[in-house]
Length: 248
Image 1 (cartoon, helix red, strand yellow):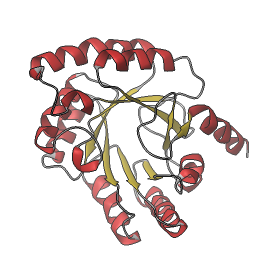
Image 2 (image 1 turned 30 degrees about the vertical axis):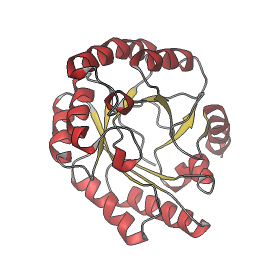
Image 3 (image 1 turned 90 degrees about the vertical axis):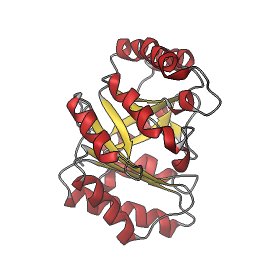
């Protein structure tokens, strides 16, 4: 397992999503979660601020983002800023995605998520690098699990795009799907220079959130409070399993 480039500890990282309707609410969540054991990274999901029913305009949203990001910076926990598009289960319209990610990059966080399937992803990855942020290229299959060859190709595309981390999440409908995802994660971890993250969502995929590092996954996502995806477990639960496996 290759560690995330923006986390000093080499062990598999626990990423805690922060998902709130407003920047102020997100900041409060971050402050409350920062004292919990096992929190290695915050993922601030800012796509709710770009939802169609928000009418503040770009200047108002940027001011809200900048005010709220101060709380994340003060926590001294590395922050991954993510815009999840409506196409991949989030709140941001696809036609506003590039502008929203540009806003994320302007905060100069430790890392930025870029969906590989969105137009302009190459330019966004380059812009994030120029700003000094690590990049996670991501893809989310909410309906089903792609085939083994499709998953291999996805990871390869992300590595070839120059991302610092490759992340694939998929929805399984059987344990065969879970094994397909884990197998692809392992192969990608061996084939590519960059760290990879592989997650099977939902109840069937819970094992990948607990034991993904055994298959080469550099991180998992866990909750402190409200989660952002089906099947997520608490940071405390994941940290307990991580400590047991690391002792081995």
